[in-house]
Image (cartoon, rainbow, N blue to C red):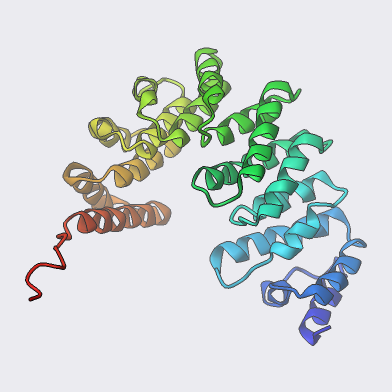
Length: 315
């Protein structure tokens, strides 16, 4: 065991000592021997300490792409504390290892905690997407979809059913369309929000009318989901509405409108985001606007690249 890892484990073993990001870096990319050592110590910690560690490594991984704590997070998936399992799933949001898809599917079908099942169902969305673009094998894709469909129809917890529907939005299976329609037409706000999220993920223009209908809905949650869906589906006819929504009183709606305008692009969107940037004061909003304008410039720039016939004029 390395000196750095020993130093980390000694520090973490003392709950009176604060977690230090600098020492936690030694838990990145643990080899097999290091993971076994970490696991032996991990089992003795209190749940609060485990959560503290997971929260730190989750933030560190988001801020530094060179750090990888997937092995620690995978270890935490088997913890006896539901809050620890749930945080570990959240930390693994970028992991595309097929074995994780299998593990999340098992959690959706059998974890005793509804919160863990719901978080796992949300995490399976990326595996549905990966399957639809042929990045994972058909057997795993079928396993994931079957598990989500079963959970959407049978789980006793509403949040599990909703997260399952949202993840199924990426699926091309025909029965998913009916599930989305049923949720949308229910008139129940949480179900309608999940339906709008699933519509956005479907990449299908068939949902355009439903999205447009909710852009100015009095319920902020529905307004926000419809606003994001307009961007996901690149509904160009919604640009004027989205520009109006950048002045919405609800932060989630306003930020969703900024993001969606960037996804759609074009001159009107560019001018609107530029005007907003000139007066923006919040750092996060400024960053979102700058990223959006950079994205529009990149996408519009690639559209302008001429496609030359490389075979012409070479003689």
